Length: 338
Image (cartoon, rainbow, N blue to C red; front, top):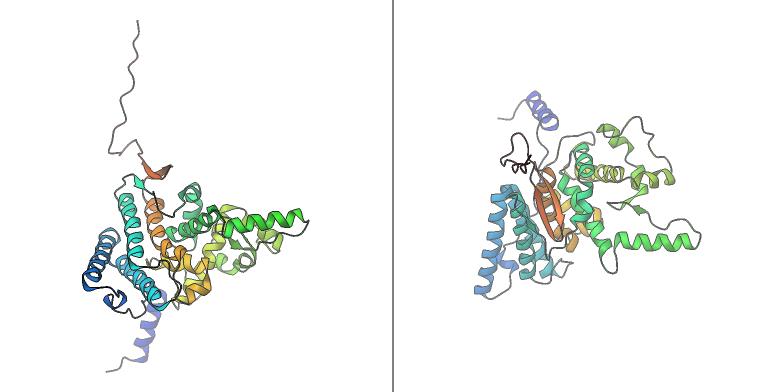
């Protein structure tokens, strides 16, 4: 029997007003074994390794994160087979990269020293701005790990020998200033946010209550550029732009401000921010593949109860001593008096 129109209306209202956002349903996945054109013994060994990675993520973050990893790996393998852009040339390389990241993520979850040796990650750009990343992400209802992965990708690119986004911008702006011309770059700051996109965020930021009403919103290119040099505002504009994209993708109304938590966002947000056309074409590349794991790692580091410090290529947890701590401080050095 079909429900009455009034019941249908109530159901729709519940979905729109009170229900959690619709999950990001994966595209139909091909058989994993069909994506591994190897002799049976090698193919089964790779399947076993993938399932071990997936089981590790399930234990660390739950079923949704494990499914998001499975989706990412299958997308990467499908791109390798079809000749589309992929992050790696072989399945072995992709599985090894995932395994190395998962080892580091597991160490962070256990609050043990995190070995970052060999990982394409740049926490020295992220940790100094942990407070701003958390604040901007929470203001737009996003996981901080998504925003942290974007910062890492963009700044890690600038650290490379030839430079990518940040490096190219700095060189181009330097040449432009030398020639007495206007700055060349359209993107600035931690997340490489464009000044044009920043000017489009006013309505959403006000809707989320994320903009300080005492601060005038930028109206010109110069004002937008000046705002984007502020780390927090750079991240706030970036988070707003991402939230608009996610609301559209999830078929949510523009005014929907509920927090989003789907683990697939750790891949999709940085991929879309870094290279929208590739993301739309379901391509994978190094920044997009790695961002999923970076996002999970930073989510643990930024949202945990403790704090972390970086020493070389190791992340070390800082122990907080005081009331309620599990470890008592060392006894004071005795003072001897005559």
